[in-house]
Figure 1 (cartoon, rainbow over the protein chains, first blue to last red):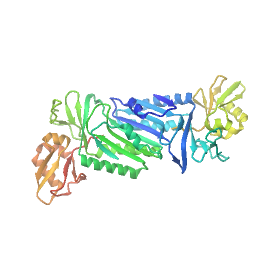
Figure 2 (cartoon, each protein chain N blue to C red):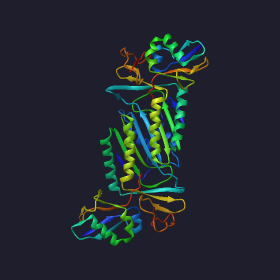
Figure 3 (cartoon, each protein chain N blue to C red):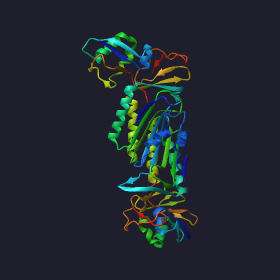
Figure 4 (cartoon, rainbow over the protein chains, first blue to last red):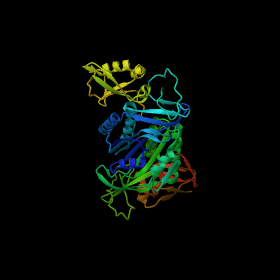
Length: 158
Length: 158
Length: 81
Length: 81
């Protein structure tokens, strides 16, 4: 099952859903908001998705993972909107008869998600700056704009 | 932190303890009782430890993992006594700034635990048989003994 | 024909709008749409150079034919997870 | 001297007791203890052949010296996790 949600990811319910009497292993991965990145303080991350395409793509990742490994359950949840430090922006939970598959599928799913699924994060830095994270886009030629928290139309690139 | 416990492993509290504002990744591994192994039905698993040595060894595994990877938190919990199907006998939870370390440490910890830590499981099969699991011990020369649930002194080897 | 291109993240903020509509001559490909967007919104040039395109909510190459009913989107480098 | 060897899992159930105490001549090694246990409890021979030994709650080789105060344990192949 895949899900995009504006709410806190409920890990206990997620683990309940992947528990399975045929499973010997459960692997849960949480991607959490890190407060400090390269020495800069993050207030929160804001996630935006191209929802229709992201849902389609996540469902394909689940189907691919189920084809590649003997999974019993496979859940991918991505949170959208604001995600404060230490909270999860993404959760991937898989169960399988043996642990090797669960670890391999979990790693492959998060790697694939981060590489391909049309979801973007914007850093809200403690110094007031905001910037969308677009890996590979060269440093912005213009300096990042210092904006009020209330504004948010203007951004800079990494 | 490491722990041997006779009680259900509380995953939500475990995840709370490894959550960290400096973490970008949390990996939780659960080893759960599988109902069917090689076509035979398991009623439950029973775990026994050489407690003093197991605690010492688990603490060393935690210390080794913290030396090898940049972990923020690292928790290992092993349950002892009866563990019914779909419940966790072991939980390993780690957090780290980036996901590669969390996955690598989680896998290394469960592999090392299963290889070295003096904990043993006994299968309680649905057909009434019980047997201690001792990998590498050849098939028992005597057939396994069918015992009442109430007895349990007699066992066979795998 | 008119083609509406959905924008996200930095591209959306650079333009201050969540889509841009361009006119292309039929038959058109995603490459033709790209050229038209670059002309209509020069501010997006650098972003476009590093972006992929989606057609019908799937990644597609610039050779892919586009009709007026197609859902087209500019996909800047992703950063979910 | 007397050395008490802790037993676990199948070894404990085979003997119906959680330890076996053997007499060894000083100075003794874990190897001497092993020989004495095999003589005292022949039922454990196959298990011992596949087991490791622990001294003071740590794995130790058969060359390791043993004193009467040592905590000695027979560690059959483990299956935790």
